[in-house]
Each structure stands twice: as C-alpha cells, then as structure tokens.
Length: 153
Image: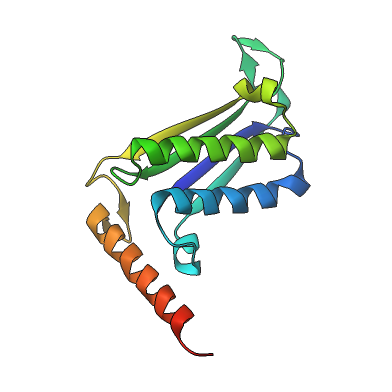
C-alpha cells in the first residue's frame, strides 16, 4: 500500500507529461518494493499530484525562484532496503526530471523524501495493516500471475 505525493508549482510539469509520469512512478515503486505490477497492486498504490499556485513556493524564504518539486514516498516499515530505496530515488528523480524538462544540472530542484510508517501505524479498512500480511499478499499475487502466464492459451 505505498503512496506517492508529488508537489509542484503550477506549470512545472505540463499536463500532457503528468499522466505518463504518475503511471511510471507507480510502476517504479512497485518494482523497488518487490511487488508484482498487477491491477491488484496498482489499485493499492496511490499517487497524489498537488499543484501549488506559483506564488505558494518561496525559495530561501522569499517568493519567486525556479520551480522546485518535492516527491514524498510513503511505504510500510521494512518494505525498502537501503539499496532498494536508493534505486527508487534514482528512478523517481529521472522520471520527474524528464517530465519537468530539467537538465542534470537542474537536478537539485527535485527532492525525493522517503518515509516509512512504523509497523502497527498503518491502518486501512478499519484495522491495522501489518507488513507480514502485505508480504503474503504480494507472494500470493506473484504466484497467481505466474500460474496465469504458464497456463495454456
């Protein structure tokens, strides 16, 4: 049940690039979490795109400046090792850079913040969601997908 929240000033990411970006971010997060990229897992991977008025961003406490983009990634505790987190940050940065038309020299304008929700602190459906249950669901979904792919057509 990962979540991504992209916050950017109006116009920093063109509307025609937004849909492709959000789809790519969901896929990369599932990849780095080790979850299968299936309809089941996509339905449980939420992405919020927050567009701020241009005057809502202050750089150094002052209005104006070049657009900055923040991507908050929220996952259950233990879902990402340090290696996986580094891979996710690199992929998210590359995807946002492309969507925003930023050069490598402008890369400092994108920040990716990874947040882990402590075990026992993530709730859905009126109850606590435990990481072990998510891991079991991921394994079952991978097995169902493998069986479906192996079945004769």
